Length: 120
Image (cartoon, rainbow, N blue to C red; front, side):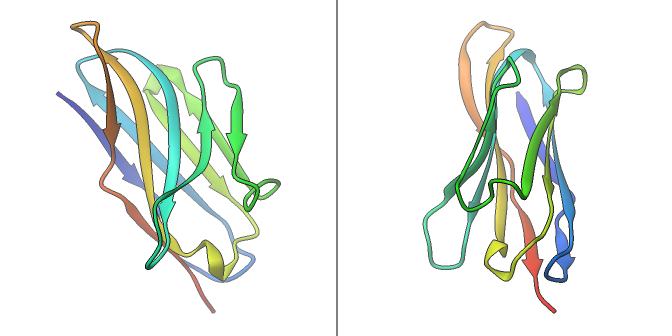
């Protein structure tokens, strides 16, 4: 069993910052890509940022220059530093990871989601 547990969401004013964390635990052999998605009200879930096992990262155009994804492999944790937040960043943010478990099979796991609200 593997779990992804997110933390760090909340209410912030426009221009403010938040840092999301997502820790993976359980029967983990290795972790490949770790991603952050978000789902805006009434819209489909979209990829915000991705980081691969070699620390190469990709970002959605809407967050480039404002968000930074990073990972701590020793802690099986991925972070999303969000700066210069805008009201349109308001969404539920989900952690996603491709994890090889001890039976050497790779599975796709999701966190429970954390609400980020940007409002004055």
